[in-house]
Length: 236
Image (cartoon, rainbow, N blue to C red; front, side, top):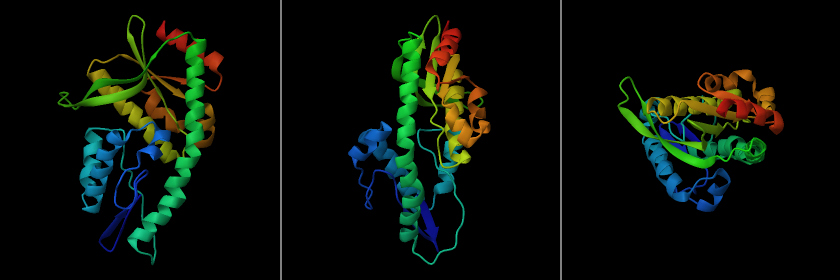
């Protein structure tokens, strides 16, 4: 959460203290390591506190990453930037962080049950090359939750779409869209699968999934037996 008031910036990030020191233990729930997160936390802190967040926005359009800057809005307040950032963080970020953890665990459990029923032994947590741009000059590595090879490579990912707002949920779907486009351009795979929970769509609306189904097969895993049948058809 970052706030600017009268030219003064304040920022508060998950898993860091006021000095920017990262607590690796608090990142375990997200499946992040301290080494992987520390550099990004420092980057966002430095860019935002120096007022260079527009450059961050431009960069993430060209090269999507695991982390994304989302512009909020304006509000009236008599508090300092530091106090306002702390209050908004407690109300929005921390509440979301606590609430979304059970959803993420439930989705993982349903996906792994789907793979088990389908008798598909997928490789977890894979990294592949990705390319963007007209000539593929912008390249990087992107991650997918699973990879399965059966004549061709299938890259699969969990989309945790339970969020406080549809806009936030759609960011997850757009991030997946960008990963797929980059991985496909680099020749990493031609088959992609997105796992999701229909319960999230009931709360967020079907539109949040649109960026994902434009580039991949989508599977609702709320009923693992049915999801397994659909998955077997895709990878067979």
